[in-house]
Image (cartoon, rainbow, N blue to C red; front, side, top):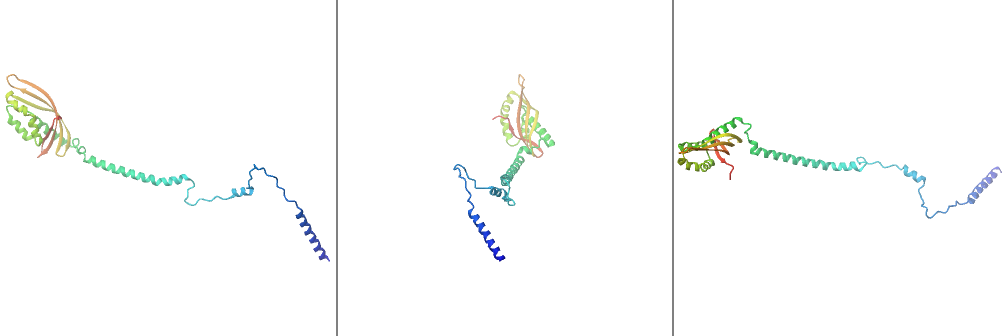
Length: 239
């Protein structure tokens, strides 16, 4: 009997709970204003978004765009610098070769004092001899030409003194040239170029003696043959 009573009471409790669940009113939803924007995301969704872990960048991947650009530009910059340095080296090498080939760079007039003094002394003597003429001793002038002149200078000297030679016997001319200053412009081995400053006096010794004076400036090229410097060309700076 006791067991039967308990079973009946249990069935009654279950029936009561079922009746209460059936009788519970449905939740009433309030009307929604058409202008209101519904937000379907709730607190759980927001919390989920905040809690969502961020993906870690892969190893070797830059965290920002700037380092990436720097990594991309660096090889290009190095390439450009290499090209520039190579071009500069080529230019420097070419410039050095040009300077070495330039006759001005081979000029030893300021470094070879002994050779410079030698060429100045011998050419000074040569100029005084070949540009002086005495109507009474034409053979002396001819000997000076053979001794001190060579190459083009022989014909140039003949043309320059043609008038003096023609008038000398009649006017009894005596031409004297004295070098007052000289400078070695170029000295390269057995070649040299000198600037000459000279005073000239032209004296007529006829019935009425008359002397005229003049200053001259010209350049001469010289070559050294057999230990002696000789004038190879004469430049009067006139065309």
